Length: 302
Image (cartoon, rainbow, N blue to C red; front, side):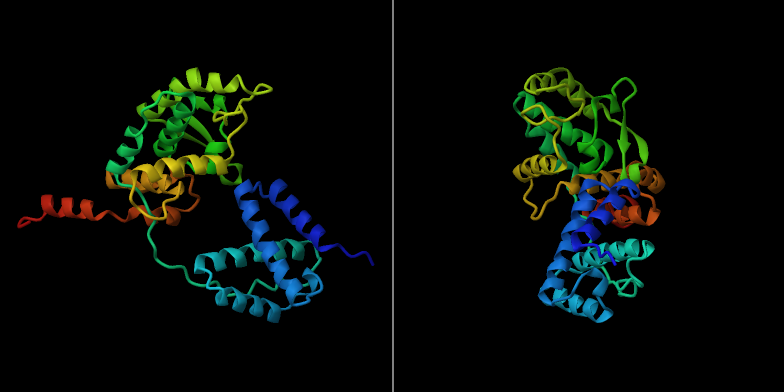
């Protein structure tokens, strides 16, 4: 009987993720890391292939993760990846059961999303003093992320024709290849127009061929989501004293500021591209300054 190699199991799963699930590069890379981590565990415990894994092996793996003091969110992600991996191979009848199906996921903490205050966002934009092509590009990226709340991975996939400056919208391809049109504010439109008509033209001259990507690297190729994260993080660190900032915090800031200024929760859900309202509800927290301001203006004896 022909037996697939462990690498073939992995390759088939990732073909499924790309072609059937339309998973993003970011998602597939995370899945790959988690599956390779489990594969190393298998080798260390002399487990002969994915089909030979037992529920006791799974318990041993969980024990190892907790001994390494991984965050609960990280453990949940790893288990979720492996559950999906085995679910696929169960469907293809390579295993008789999903050994990760009955694993109880650790409860996630109630940590609220980190965000920048409106004044910090203004400082972020005020910090741009040069008008060089790459500065124009970086400002356009930040204005676009803050104006729309889109993910960095979505931003990296944009092409020039996805931007409509006449009516002020951008076509975003979200998770699962779902499309949504998102409005652009005046500041974002101005920054994008300047970059597209000036900075991008100059950067594109360095490319070896025509490139439709909206955001280009200094050689004229498409900026990857990793490069955009690096660019945004460097800009954020220059103006904020907060620790552990992430580019994704721009998205958190967008949602928080919209809700704090009276936006409807379902509108914000649609703008963010959330499938479930529960994903958006985490942003209904308000800052201490907002609470203090509301109290001061509404309580009769404040």
